Image 1 (cartoon, rainbow, N blue to C red):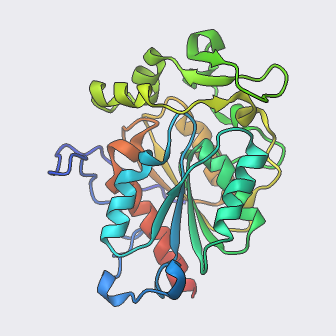
Image 2 (image 1 turned 90 degrees about the horizontal axis):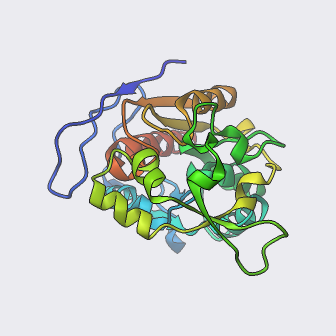
Length: 288
């Protein structure tokens, strides 16, 4: 399967995000203008497009999808970024599945980082997810944990004491704590392609993730039955490109490789990520 490569862009538009170079035309179709897509009742998207639901990963929150939501909504799509509890893969997926069941009509489900594990499990518990999009994400098989999929050269393979500030939390299982990424790791390994001040602000506002989130075995592998797309940043030092390619290929995903970026390319280059989401939207539209 061909892997279109996107060079890191060099110009910045007025809204503050870097413009991604145009991705291969054979992979991405032009979105139908909003005026041509009358809304469905109940807020479930349009007659030509599903609702896009975006799930963030660890040490992040819904604001990490702000660029993609703005672009999608500006093009007339319905997009929702919802909170991922970051507590336990099983219960996190159940929470997301509950939200998905509230949406009438088809869904394109998007996950970043640990959020990829969550969508892999949540999509198997509802019947309206028609496409999965993995953005620098984990896509576990049944029995695999998110923590086992970072890759042999991942920055997360360093001793835990050098990576995390570990903090107890109420009602945690025995021996389980919340993890915060240390500032140096966040700036140099997690968000290294963002301006230092922006990366520092994101470090200061990060959400903690429970150790249990990374250690819970996956109960489902929704990518076996649902078409998937995979966005891989070559600059990702948290889940390595090699690990992501392995997961994408076994899932039969349509792969897009972005040259450069970081684990937070969804923030630094939302246009490039949105192109992949739009490819999934268009494919679902053709199925209807």
